[in-house]
Amino acid sequence: MYKLDQSKTPFFDKLKTYGTSGTTSLDVPGHKLGSIDTEFKKFLGENVFLLDANAPRGLDNLSKPKGVLKEAQALYADAFGSDHAFFLINGTSQGIMTMIMTVCRAKEKIIIPRNVHKSAINGLILSGAMPIFLKPKMDKDLGIANGIDIEELKETIKEHPDAKAVFVINPTYFGVASNLKEIVELAHANNMVVLVDEAHGAHFRFHESLPLSAMEAGADMSACSIHKTVGSLTQSSVLLVKGDRVDLNRVQSTLNILQSTSPSSLLMASLDTSRSYMALHGREKLDEVIKLTRWAREEINKIPGLKAITKEYIVENGDYNYDETKIMVKVSDLGLTGFDCYNILSEESNIQMELAETNLILAVLSIGTTKAHLEKFIEGLRKLTKHKKENTIIHQIRFTYPESYSRPREAYHAPKKFVKIEEALNEVAAENIMVYPPGIPLVIPGEIINEDILDDLRFYKEQGSTILSDSQDGLIRVVDKENWMKYEGDL
Image (tube, rainbow, N blue to C red; front, side, top):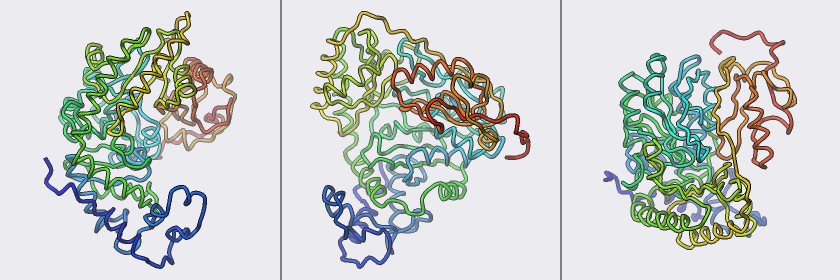
């Protein structure tokens, strides 16, 4: 399966050698390899500081790798089935913005699902690209947005043959995967590049029972959150490139704009070692996890009022595939919202769920998940039944397409003002407003705020959800149209 020796961890090995060499540190960082006895050091120990180096001689440079980092990235490309790999130390958000900025210039079109992560919208702002939004498939029973409808994509490509790229979420936050291979073939047949947000699918490559990975499907670029499902430290991800449709020089120069010039050696070492572990042991470990999830679903579905979503359910409802390492549990038949259950599980059972929605809660499993974890989860779910209420949970799922007044980039640069939420109707948004997690915007810069958006905003605030925006509570930042000479150049 692999051409290179995946047991090797070149960057981590070199970093250990440096950290234990007794070097006199007259460079940054200021803790001088752990010479300051803070409470943080007392808790973590000395080794973490010995490895927190800032690109000393021999440890290579992420902005232009020539040594151990170049070798480590080549090992990643080999393990993940790509031609090239780039370490990301600002998360998959950095990778998503890089993909869009690499492929799209100002005013060029990109076909993109409306349920994208906020980083994709930021990529539109930075690149100046014009989004052509696809409506995702909707599951009204669960109240979630899923994958891409192939027929709608065909129609959109027909209407916008000049689009530069098709952006795909593989899988969605909830684990639903589209027919990525068919999407790639369709896009390439129309001279469009395929960019994949694979934040929750970094593990796909390592087990045949999971959905097809972006690189296996022939996509041109994908950004993978190694930290989410493969075990590296939080904020460490990888950008993968395959084929000759993407300019590698532009990829690197874009990364150099977005990434720190002082990348964390700890994050990069964790990428190096987690890749090796996954290549050597990933299939075996994922096999165990998949078997555990199937057992857990059976147990959960024995609990009255709860429904653990299966792969069969997803496919029967018209979507293509499902990542079984995600466990969605519909809880609304208990007369409780997912937000209620999220809080109850935390307070009564010390269980931290990934997220809640009106009708469900989501658990994200990985090679680090054990049977003991799932046994505790199942027991916590059993305790939920004592909180059952007679009321019916009704939340009309709607996925509105706000009218676009301008490109996101134009609205970002326009004069702005703050208005109260209750006075924002028909204003042009100048910021992303989203519920987090999962970080899908209710409205993006350049869109006209309608009543549905305001209703959804009020609903999520009542549920205690985290609303991310640039404004203080109760305010929305909007375009000051009276003082805006709308710019029609190449901005």
